[in-house]
Length: 81
Image 1 (cartoon, helix red, strand yellow):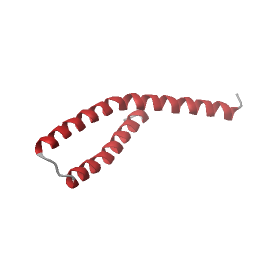
Image 2 (image 1 turned 60 degrees about the vertical axis):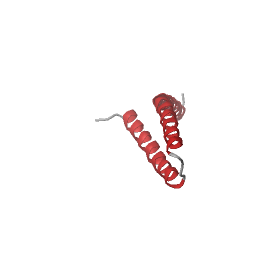
Image 3 (image 1 turned 135 degrees about the vertical axis):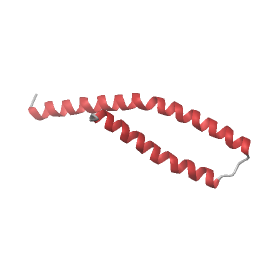
Image 4 (image 1 turned 30 degrees about the vertical axis):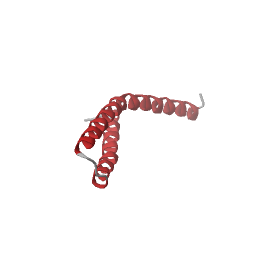
């Protein structure tokens, strides 16, 4: 069974894909370009996406750590420590 961190990662990736794919499809359906220009643009977009995706796990880890710390602090405050 997946732990909460894995579930959050899967949900964020699904969200990112769900947001980006329709935008990409809309872009190519409404903007016509020459074949060479389109291929160059696709390569740049793929490179940018690779850079973004490589940073996602680190961002998720930092967000998870911050959420964990905030929860611990809130729990301590509610207990009167």
